[in-house]
Image (cartoon, rainbow, N blue to C red; front, side):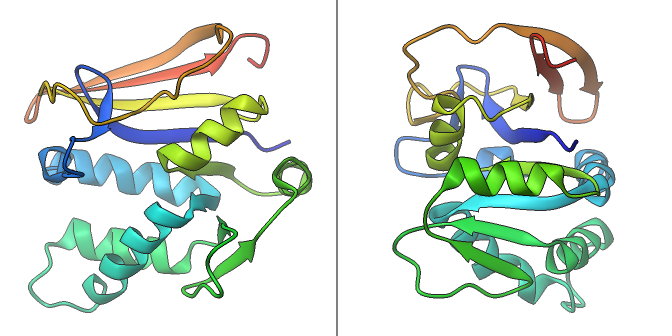
Length: 190
C-alpha cells in the first residue's frame, strides 16, 4: 500500500510562507534541487490543494523548455509535468498538466489512491495538509528546514487538538545551503 507523504520547505521557526506569502527564502540551490528531483522521481502521484496547485501550474510548465533554466530546474519541470496529480478543490472548475480534480470525499479518494500500485502519494500545501492531518491520512512528514527565522506566516503544521506521535526515519544535512532534511514516520506506520 502506498503512503501519503507531506513534504515542504519550512523555516527554522516552523513556517512555510512568510506573513506576506513570500517563499523566496526557500529557493533551493543545485544540490538541494537535485535531491528534490530524486525524491520526485519516486513519487507515484502528487496531491495538491488549490493554492499550491495554482502556484505550481503557473510556474513549472514554462520552465521545461526554457533555455535559460538551469538543468536541475528544467529536469524538475519535466518530472512535474509527467507526474499524475490530484487536486482537491471545491472552487476550481478545471485543472491541467496531467491533473485530475476531486471536489469531495477526501478520505475515500485517498483510500482508493493508496490501494493502487506505484510510488507514494506526495502531499503539498498547508491547507490541504490540515484536512489530511485531521483525518489521520498522513503517513510520513518530510521537512526541509531552512536556516531562516520568519517570525510568522503560514505554519507547516496546522493547529491540532491531539498530539501526533512520530518516529525519526532519516536525516540529511546539505552543506552548501545549511538546509536540514528531516523525515518522520507516523508512529505505528513504520
